[in-house]
Image (cartoon, rainbow, N blue to C red):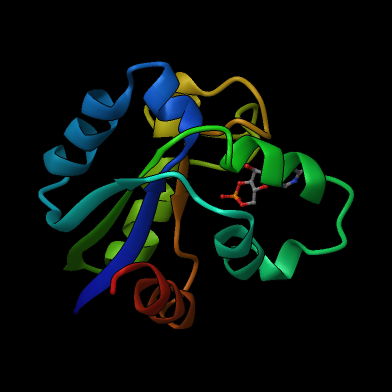
Length: 133
Ligand code: CMP
């Protein structure tokens, strides 16, 4: 069934000039890009977005990294796009990400892993409502 998901191309994707290649992979899957904009995320945005990671050891590094430059925020739609985009991203740890996935191909650290993709229908609704005004 047709779903929507929130995708964020993280600051390393922009710094490394990988935006075109990553969007290319999304287009090759024939998903639809419904909207796209660039923004530098604030601490407030990130505290909302990463609420589930508050208090974890990597949280301060996550805030520094995610606010270090502009990101690209997209709403992507398609059949079962939430699971499909998670699969296309690959595992958080690039050593576990399958070859051919975005992280498996381009990421080499767990922290700077290029892309965020909503993990459930509930998260996608929450994230789209916040980031797309
Ligand atoms: P993501 O899975 O999109 O959301 C949480 C992010 O925190 C993760 O991507 C990484 O960018 C970052 N992160 C940094 N260190 C860790 C870690 N040890 N475990 C999980 N995520 C981490």
